[in-house]
Length: 498
Image (cartoon, rainbow, N blue to C red; front, side, top):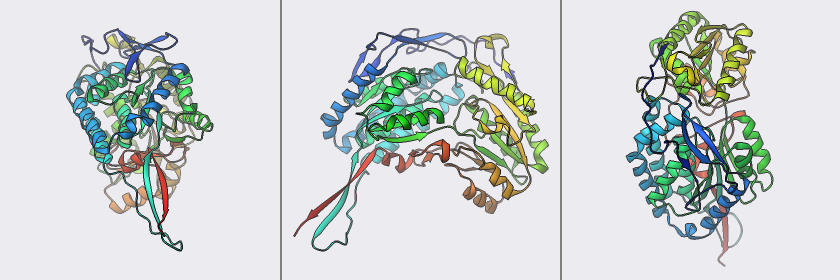
C-alpha cells in the first residue's frame, strides 16, 4: 500500500469555513432554532463550513413552501418548460463540474480520481430526465362495458416529495432525487446527510440560477433523528425517496403509515461477486478488487462477498490482495490517490470493529486489516484495503454490511451450491460474475436474486437503466423510465358519451 504525502489544502469557495444557510421557498434562511453544526474534511479534520441545523419546524416550513408551489404556479408549468429548466441545470452542473467534484472530495473524502469521473453520469442524468419530461403520457384503453363509455388514463405528479440522501455520493445522489421530481412536476424537500451537506446546497444554488421557481426545491440540512424523521412522518408529504441503511429504511416505512405516503427505498447490500475458473483473471483481479475498494467500500452495492472457484482460489485471492497493497491511500485532493478516507470517525470505528471481528472469527487478512496512521494521514479516517481469506458463509464479515474497503473471499466448488450460497443473504442489491462462458453467464444472472447483475464488469450504471434492490435492499427503482414512474400517480377517467 502506497501512502500519499501531505499536500496543500485547496480552499473551495463553498468550503472556506464560512456559514451556510438552508434553502426554503427560494430564500436562504437560518434554522428556526438558530442551531448550527460543523462539517469537516475527513482526510484532515479541517473545518469546511458551519451549516444551519434544521429540525421539525424547518421541515414544516419547507413542506408548506413545497405544497404552495405544487398547487400554485408550478402546477401550470408545461412539460417543455420543465425540460428547459433541467437542461439549463445540466449546463450549469457541467460548467461547474470541477468545483462540484472537488466539493464532494472535500466533504466526504472520495478521491478526485473518482469524483471527476462522474461528469458523464451527473450531467447525463439531468439530460435524461429532461428527455423524459415530454414523454410522460397516459393511454386510451378500450373497455368492455355496455354502451358508449370512453376510458383513458392520466399520469399526474404525485405531489410533495421528501428526499433523504446518504453521504457516500452527494452530487449524484442529489441529482437522482431532484431530477425526476422536476421532470414530473413534483416539488421536493431534500434532507442531505449531515456528514456531507455542502454539494447539495451548492446544487440548490445552481437550480435557482437555472430558474427553478421558489418552493420547487428546498434543502434542509440536519440530523436523521430530527429533520429526517420529521420529513418521513410529515402528513403533507406525498412520497419519501430514501437512500441509506436498511435499518433507517424500516423506520421510514413505519413513519410513512400515518398518511400512507408512497415510499421508494434504495438500501444496503452484501453483494456476491463470483469468479469462475474460466474467467479472464487479468481483468477479474482489478475488477473484483475495485468492486469493493472504490470509494473506500462506501457503496451499497459493493461486491464484498467474493466467491472464487476452488481450483483458482489461492492464486486469485492472493492476486487481489497484492492489487490492494499497491493502491495509493491518502487525501483525495491528490490526483494520484486511489483510496480516500472513510467519511467520519463513527464510520472508522464501525469498519475497524469489523476488522477485529473478522480476525477473531478465524479469517486471514492477506492485505490490510487496520487503520492507516502514517504521516499526514494520522488526522484522517483511513483504513487500508483489506482482503480476508478463509471466510465462511456464517461469519459476520460475510453476512453484515461493513461499508468499508473490506473483501470477504469465499471458496466454492459446485455451481448449484454456489447460487444458493450467493442468494443466502437478507440483501439483494447488486451482484457480479466473471466468466468466458456465455451460457453460464445467462444461467447464473437469471438465478441471482438481486436488482443488478454485472457480468465481466462491476458497478456499470447509466441514466436509462434502472437500479434497485430485492429483499432488504429495498424496493422501487432509480434511473430509467421506471424511476420517473415512481413520482407519478395514475388516474383513470371514464366518460359516458351516449
